Image (cartoon, rainbow, N blue to C red; front, side, top):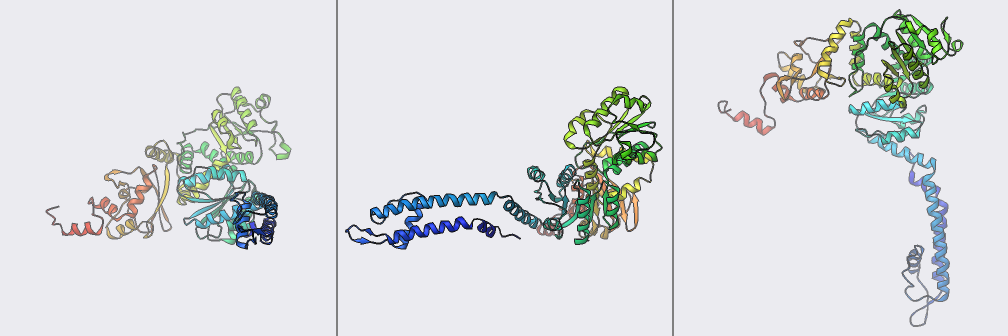
Length: 568
């Protein structure tokens, strides 16, 4: 750790020495130059009086000539001393300000401030590397849900934006290269409260280095990394990166799911949304011929997934040889009507504008709608700064990398059981998903449902744990009771109960709970707080099971025992 005081003194030592020398010479001059007292006798100023006089003379305050009026020689020396000290002070202050504004010194100052902020965190936190579109969305969602996070980004502008964010809890941010292991350690990689590392920079190589460093320096925490190339994805998988997220594959898989099972697609979207997002309306992508504009990484992922759904595709690509586009690809960007007409847009049912240029994608969409207004429109949005114009385009489905990755990571780290629930859900039919979506929509209001997990352990749910031990039977229906009025019901649904290696999907309300069960729920925001009250408060739990309100506090419990039953 750098000693800021020592570094500052080292940078301004020259002006300090000059200041000391000027003061020393001035004091010595006043001691040596003789004066005259009130009786006309020669008099010499002491070092104390000389120091006192030079001290206020240097500030140009001017308390007068002490203790006797000065001789001409003393006044001459005082004049020289005033100019010398004032000039030296100006030189010293200027040097100090220059040192404080030096980029390297400011960097050290920020590192020390950041280190102290990290050390002061006593709650569990996630280390987020990269504060672009994805990182900012994720940090905001984590903050809304009460999770702490720490950010590293190489851009000072992004760190400044983080500092200006109105988040529920302060998020320390460091402007540094996340590929450097020392910076990750400084940001809390080896901290006891670090719960995971999330690599979200826009450079696959940096994300790879973060994943390797995390796996080597702290093996107990999970690592989630973004990768947009197959090679880096395979490399990360080779050393056990816990989750690798390819936004193109993720979105293409969702598009395929929407075509195959719209109800299941809607269930996925609701379950993996960040807090307080509005409920997405159902979409029904049509079956038939589609046009795919752009055959880069996104286009290849869409091709792969739509091929599995037997969707016939016509390709439009500006550089088909460079991107190794399929045979028959039409050369062009898709922004020209002639290209779209050549792709038989009049008989197509859907179009995907998937180039890496937002302006081109919007141009493709506008041209396509003019030619065929009945098309199902899917577009790739490359930057969130274009949110307003993409919203105005009224697309059926928008692929924004930031939100795709942020939503998936948020679901993974906040409710690990959700991943297992979604895997089990995929084994069911679209009709099953429609029924579940209908139930969830009935309790969640206008916002996406909140998902949370309840672990029946002594540490996490002491009241529920003890209640199951003492009571003959505790069912899921007991968890649904409102702690404020047991005859009313909380707006929530149990999605999954995990008991050892056995998982129960959508268990009935008379399902008996046991100790060590892990329960996944979803419901309206606020229901989780009531559920936590049930799980941890013994009196609340007793009221829900028996209908009797037990007095709290030793005195009231003693009084309750002493009060005859008849009088109650």
